[in-house]
Structures are given as structure tokens and as C-alpha cells.
Length: 468
Image (tube, rainbow, N blue to C red; front, side, top):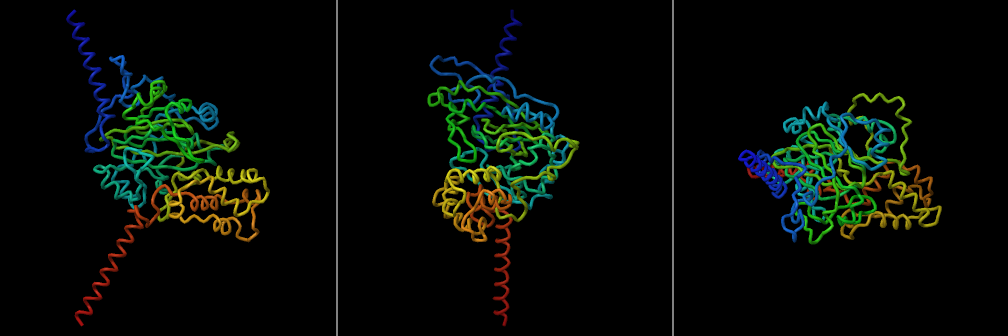
């Protein structure tokens, strides 16, 4: 009897310790010493409420309102494109590829010293660790400067993966051929000292998120639960997010939150998770847990079909991500870091649909201007800031010969380069452009250096005149 009593006490204490660790990890702020590692139990253990007047998980982190439905489906090998499409992409069903990038140079080399020495002169975008989509702060700085301070400051990198870094990552076999290889939309690079968390949100594109270093936990929620989560209505192109605080879920404000079913996964170094377009999710990392990720955003054809004809002769041998054709990229010296723009082929399709909208076979500059205003709804302040002039865009980029109108064939013949330039001049950039306020990157450094040299030159000339 005594042994059973001691065993029961032990199990009770063990349970209390586990849940205390979960509480500390999720309730604490994102600031802290980078070497103090948080040990976290995930998924958290659900505990029924002991008070009939207080529902389980009230004012606690998201996930403690009900137990998970189970883990995300896992594979130990990367699927080929057709199977990937049939079993997951076409069904909007998440998956995890274990150790999909384990043999990549990034996994083996991307320590701080290597990244700073090889890629430290590249500009990146940074945000605050605790995401806030209503008033977030996005800055621009050199990757090397970020590495110098990221262990002490409340910042993390979320940026377009600079082109030179693509050579260290693999092009996953599931994206090597078929429709996927032509619709690789954007690549992103994430880096932090830990202690980050996203809002509950969904993204416009399909997304494969691969972990190079550290650990990340994912809460995955089917889009059917969007009404309960009070998700914002997304713009024409883009994502949406929930107004529910994932750290402190108020069940008085959102009483149905406990009905939201969820699955989960923990990624370790080398693992990748597929998050379908529109699939709701929330992501966390923990203090002292340096994390680096690369994400691959892609879409499918506009009619949501898959063509695998290019897969007939595919060998699926390892090749770097630098071999892939990507719509939006960033290279050293680019004025903008092209992050968050929509798929250019989707934009072309909206362009073509305007002929039916205006019931015409000839699109004028006035109709083009109305189309842009409908697609890219911006405040007047932002329009002035980016100096958007739709009539000038029409006559310089779309109708340089002066016909006065566009036909559907004109739109179909536009290059992706031209489409991207239209988007850049019509939509607000995700972060500061080179040399603008908020830019602390290469352009800013060069400006400071040039001004310092000019000051020295003026001072030398003054000294020479004084000697005379």
C-alpha cells in the first residue's frame, strides 16, 4: 500500500513538473539570455478544469483548451511530385518529411561564423520576435550585423532567402518536376536566438518549412475552424490571422475556441513540414534554442490541376536550390527585398479577368487604373509614399508604342519581369527599400561611409588652407 501511495505521489509530481515547464515556456516573454535553454513538453498535456465555472484552458496558451487530435502525418522519405499532389497538395493535407534536408551543406555548415563570413554582407529583413500583424516593425540590416546582436536583442530575421545562400540548400524531390517546378513563388530565410512565436494565421501560398537548426513546434488547424477563430478577411492576395491571443486564450470572448480541433508536430534539424495554402497554423520556438529555417512557397496552376509530363525523365538526384527557377528573388544590391508579393501568374490572370469585368476587348489606361485600385487597396499615405502613378505605368510598361489600349493577347505576351515591375510600383513593399528610413543595410552603411569620407576630405582641405 505504501509503495502504491509513493508511486501515485511520484506520478502526480511528475505531471505537475511537466505542466509547469509548459506554462513557463509559453507564458514567458521572448526576451532572455540566449544560453538559457527552455525545455518544453509538446504537445502540452490537457488538464480538465477543476472549477465548473471556469472552462479548461481559460487564459492559458492555445492548445490547453482541448487535447490534440493527433500528430501530423509523417514520412521518412520525400514523396515524388505526383504522389505529393495526389495525397496531400490536392487534398490540402499537411505532412512532415523527416530528415529531408539532413545532408545539405546548410545543415552541416550554417553556424554563426560561417554565415557571417560568407553571407554577412547581404541585406535581410528583421521583425520583432513576438509577431503582431496590426503594428509590426520591419527593418533592414546586414546579416553580419544581425548575427552580432541577435542573442541580445528582441529581433529575428524573416526575409527573402538571398540568392547566394540557395546553393547550400537542396531542391526537394517533391518540387523537382511537374507543375510545381514552374510555380516556385518565393524562398524565405528565418533566423533567431529562440523565443519567437507567430500569431494564429494562414498563408496564401503552399509552404514547405524546413528546419536547418534548432527546434520549432507547430499547431495545425483545418480551415473549417476559421469562423471560430475570428480570422481577418484576407486581401485579394495574401494571408489572414486570428484576433485570439495564442498565449492567453480568453474563453469569455471566444467561448467556442475549445471546439477547435488541432494536430501537431515538432521539427528538429533536417525536418520539413508541408503547410497547405489556407491551412491555419501557429509556430513557436523557445529561449536559448537558436533556430534557422528555410521555407519554399509555391502554387499550382490557376485551374488547380497538376501536370507531371516533365517528370518522365526526372532522376531525382540531389541538386541545389540555386538550380530552381523562382519568381521573386533577392541579390546583393537590389533596391527592394521582394517579400510578400503575390504569384505573378495569378496577377496575370486577374489582369485578364478585367476584360470580362469591364465587358470590353480593349483595356484603357483609365480601366487599368481602376483595376489596380481594386487589387492593391492602399491608404493615400502609402500611395504617396511609393509614388504610385497607374497612368504612367500603363504608358511606359504596358503601352510604350502608344496604341492607347491593351488586348488580352498583349497581357498574355507580357514577360514575368514586366509583371513583377508593375507589382513593385503598385504595391507597398514588405520592408524598407535601400537607403530609405528604417534601412540599416548595405546602402545605409555606404551612405554613412561616404559622408564620413567627405567630412574627412573637407577637414583636410580646411587644415591645408590654415597652413597656408
